[in-house]
Image (tube, rainbow over all chains, first blue to last red; front, side, top):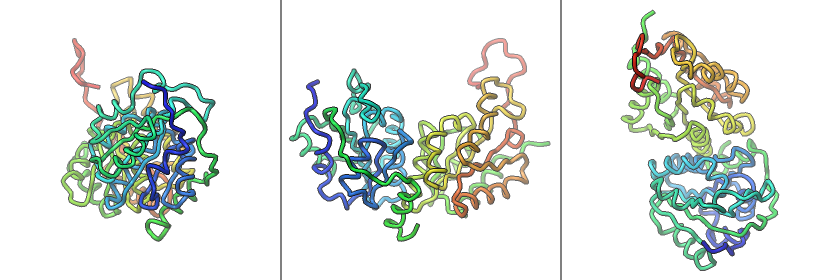
Length: 194
Length: 185
């Protein structure tokens, strides 16, 4: 496989030109920072700074409970592998409103850049296909990324887009780390009440 | 003491949960929650979610809460050991997480593998801020269900309904098996 060339900081703005149209969940660390930068830490985003592996199932919970909303999960390769079984759960429930974007930098960026399994022999897109997701795509180049934006709108859901990026840093965005405050903020915006 | 009728108590529990506004039934299959999930599968306002691991259910229920829906996470006691990190959402995020745990490894258990986790269920849940309401006899079920629903959806706590083996009846094992018993784990 060719070495990745994409800078993760440029990815989400291409994939989500109108972030206000989505409810977002992100996992911890870099994916949370990038998602917070995309939405300006908006009330349509719930980010984590712990509970590694929870982003996909939390996105599934939102997608099932709010079938009229467009839901997107922003995660990383390490987080997704930690709870990779949740891809089977997503495939079985098959919500038509759920997209997952995995920013795959092949390492654990938050803890010092130690290499992860996707830098070795593991292919998350193949694992997601095996789990039974309706649509799976891998983006390696800027052209792929433009196609990825289309994929997130047009491909059958649930869908996973794996974006292979260099091991450079995420955005420097500093977001609210209080989960109780972020929960209330999200509910207030979506439900009109805490 | 005779074993309570599973169909009867499962129906009562299901009705109480539906009345309490629970619509999402996430679960890892267990004989203790089988009838409840069957009822949820055939109810037009309920949805079931088959999980690969119990911790997923914590996050699925939290996601549902973000958009105003109520869920429950049903599992065997062994599954509690898969949940603690995700239960950070209870103390840290004040997510209203409701659990139903069907016990192994407490009363009359014959499988030695079940005791370590069975005995650790309540300490683990309590350490993570999840209140526990035990059901030892048929008469305990209704008040414990009401108490758990109140703690979670009015009190903003995590809470677990603990269905003991005294209530469920211990899993039967053959008296003396000359060869390994099929599926008897």
